[in-house]
Length: 637
Ligand SMILES: Cc1cc2nc3c(=O)[nH]c(=O)nc-3n(C[C@H](O)[C@H](O)[C@H](O)COP(=O)(O)OP(=O)(O)OC[C@H]3O[C@@H](n4cnc5c(N)ncnc54)[C@H](O)[C@@H]3O)c2cc1C
Image (cartoon, rainbow, N blue to C red; front, side):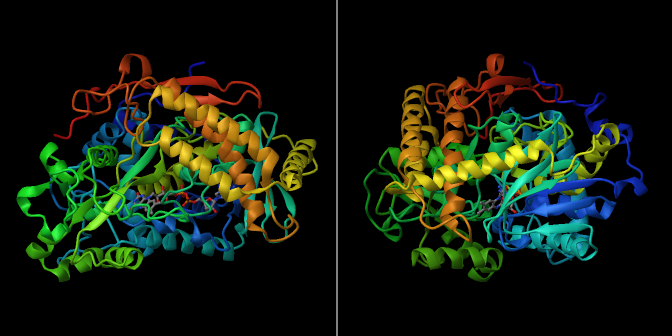
């Protein structure tokens, strides 16, 4: 069934203005009659909760952590894009739009991306007004640096802590509304199910992670801002609590899941160093502004980096992509690093690393300048590896970082369930098959501060809302389902820990559905995931009880969902018989080993619908229409 994205008519640059005018309004006195649930307090959820409450709606906000400000967004390092053109280097809204569509390998929706580029400038103004301490140049203007896939400097930053500073801004705005009584904050709650009544999202079921109590919460609309699912790979740069549960349970209630196989593998992470590791650490892409990526020219060269002369070094990105050099997009940089390691040119004990070298930059700009720009990142690297990156090049390797897939949403950010809005990394979003650096923060804040406040009003003003409360049978049934599932998982009392299953799943996904895939491997992975899932439901062990604070109980539910969702990713990857962005199927590549798209057959967003535990997911296609940019083979040469 083709999907209707409800893209407004008219010229691209006027669509959003026109749509905002055409959307129905809820008058100020009526806003307080509506209750809205927001799940998640990262940049998307924090900004949405604060803004909706400021408008006058009654908001209930939920998060897993003990404080909204501990959401995963706090980890974002490098920056946030906007088309301000402060450096006067040729940027414009159109260029940001174009770079983003091209960066996403032409698998995103033009109208959404254009709106995002337009709103990018408002975000910076808004955040400056909040007091976010963005870096400034000597004249006082906000400073910019470059990120991958762009030839201009448009990334605003606060050292290597941009996410933290932006989240503090959103959290302050949220706290004001909590104080004013317009936001009721529910920390330490995990959403376990969505309640749908007469086709409308009307509430959620959550577990209180401290008391173990299952709770029901009703509302007129639900906004999911629950982040990405990169932890399906076990090892990723995501926060430990990042998960797919809220989105996946909404999928099981009828929301379509779009492009689940589009995973971003970030090229600059600290390489895996042992089997007992549970987390990978990102070294921000901003470092590629000054760091040069290289490997020894000769496979198997075991000399220390200082002993390898210039003539024996291969600056493979600068060589292959002279226009963009080290700042090619992430998918391209990651694949090239893997290719070098596959040729035996990788460095370090495992051979699965390449160098990121600052020697030239320190010589050119002085150590003090480099320290000012990246000091906290260098310190983090040294703490983890015991090596001083001012003296010896960093060793980096690609790792799972971000997920472009997510719940399908229309132009209003509403899913295929009426009244269920999805924002930030949780939706399938504006990034197509590959996200350009510094654009996730931009998207989450555009969604929360500037889009949903309008579009949710349009929905609330236009829909009918039968009287519903938490005694409704749909709430009872959903609570019963959540409780029974938990009881079942706890009663298995098998021999393998939850983490043991999670690790095995991660290895399967990384090996067969990671940086490079092929049909044979994907088919094998599907079988392996099914076998592992079957064993999980027979042999998982959850110590302790569900009646109090127990992180094994939290994790077992999330891993159960990952074990189902992993298969959906594989099904999606198998169905997309082309390569694009983060989905690199080895069977479809150009002579230069770049992703080879098939625009004739796959120029669509693949939105999967749930059809029962034993049924095959149903594919719904949103055909992507490009009226303003020409579909070309992506080139960064
Ligand atoms: C190390 C790192 C660095 C990054 N740096 C940058 C950068 O420099 N620039 C950039 O643009 N992007 C960056 N990104 C990406 C960016 O940080 C994320 O995409 C973005 O912050 C996601 O925001 P979000 O609001 O969608 O979700 P999150 O910040 O992930 O928030 C999710 C929220 O949902 C809640 N939640 C989740 N599941 C449930 C549930 N079942 N029940 C209740 N609550 C739930 C959580 O408690 C949390 O509050 C980086 C990512 C990583 C991993």
